[in-house]
Length: 485
Image (cartoon, rainbow, N blue to C red):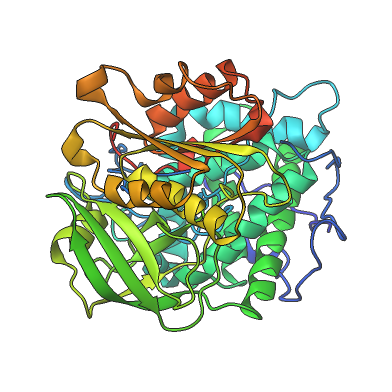
């Protein structure tokens, strides 16, 4: 899809709505059949999980308001927290729930075969990288002043939102020449944006303000060719998201209401919640969902399913309350049976390939044990006898809040082995605990827990002979956790 010819907006970000064509709502077929290729895009072969805690966003400097704006957007006050909004980077849900879900792996730096558009777009991102906070703050200031009707789609506090936008742009820039990877990422984003109320007509406004912000802060390298490259790229990418959302609307709701039917406080800060969706909720063991509580509207956090799909349709989540965590503290300390939450669509790729017979080596740290337990149940329900080795990490015995459930599963299934790794007892971090055992070359690796554990776990699994393409976990950038376990 070609973008219309444009003229430069100048550094003040001004520009008319004629910059971007009004996107259509006609769904397209899957990317495999109809790849979206903009001018200069090259098709390449596609490249080859998260604890139930939530992150406390870092503070970002106040927005630098555009000089011409009369009603600047104020920076969030101290103590406020942001949540993903309609145009925040999410990946996973492959990229839908937040612009950040399932962020594809980073590609190499642009080489001699990179397209001219890719070179210009990556050059822009390199130019604005050191002042990313100013760029994103300016973008949102433009957006909310020019299009105040869009403000309700975003959380009250915007600090985390700014960071997510930048990550989404970086992801797109890195994969602009890899159509299959980028299309999958964008389709997930488009589907995930539905729960925020995002509509097709919102995308042109976002594009104009985005280019206005980039042109201001990348003025040293900005020229008509760079602007045209961004227009082509954004027009194509937004259309992919719009088409994915339109197609998804025909088969699934934007969100599900779910009533809490059980609330089991396992420790002072960990609760196991069981909820009943108001309509069928299809998902796979190992995936996760975004969740919104009635106490913090428009603030969504991600939680892994702690069981395989059940015949009664109930869903279980493990939630750890973290300092200053709005959603996690509400779910652990305030929620009660009868309360109703909202769930976004299921996402994540830490699932079992049942066409293979490899064993499973699973490392779960803290509440990261939730999706691991779901994977074990999934194997058991299918009657498979492939070996499954589970290493359950915690700081103290008290933190092994779900060990009894796993040990009962072990008693009923001889192919399952469960080992607890308690830091204070063995003085050994979870990933390193696998080294004395094995061999592991015939296993697939699964990691779920804090970002640090996953980073170390990937290295540990590769060191013991598991190939990188057989190590599964959610993108570290998506992990909504704080600290270690």
